[in-house]
Length: 102
Image 1 (cartoon, helix red, strand yellow):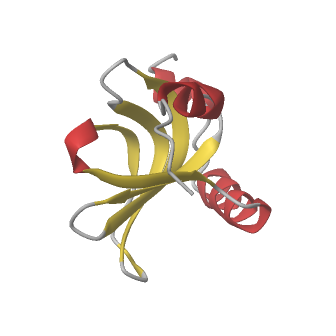
Image 2: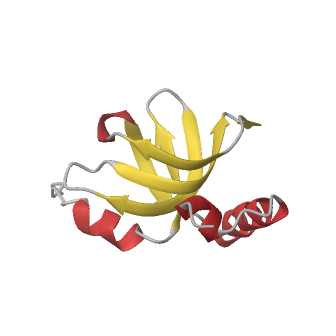
């Protein structure tokens, strides 16, 4: 059975506006909401929570990830999504804070 090449851009377009996990080549994971992507597969995430292994390493409101650093991308499962939404709710961060509105 031969493998078929698949264009990943439709997959990424389908994830825009959803909570995702991005694993980088050097082992760091980023949990966040995918806000946009481009034709080179660079990612713009918001409400980002970085992890290195099982260790949480802070948080970022916005993050841009260049495509050549990405090992894989997947949509969060329900449990992960609930956990990260509760985390940002506990910090009282709202969408207007991220967008720079007052």
